[in-house]
Length: 72
Image (tube, rainbow, N blue to C red; front, side, top):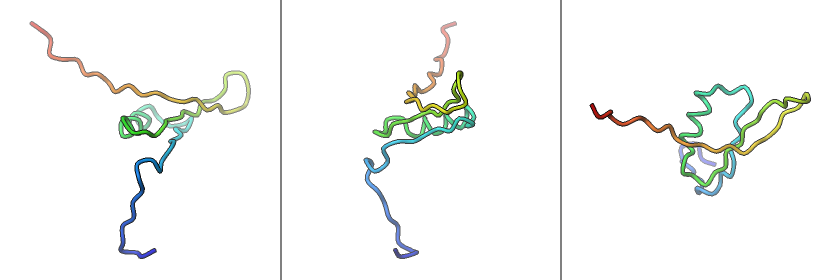
């Protein structure tokens, strides 16, 4: 590798992003918004309700729909 040379990867190189259990909602939203439309899958790490374990669930992201101007 050369220090002054830029390297890139194809869009298919990143196959998944795991969102940690302690990540704040605003941080999750930022990552999900950035990844929206990409072929990369999002996964959410959650604490189990029944045992001392972490679980992985595939996450889906729907961008926030801002309300349009109200008809007055």
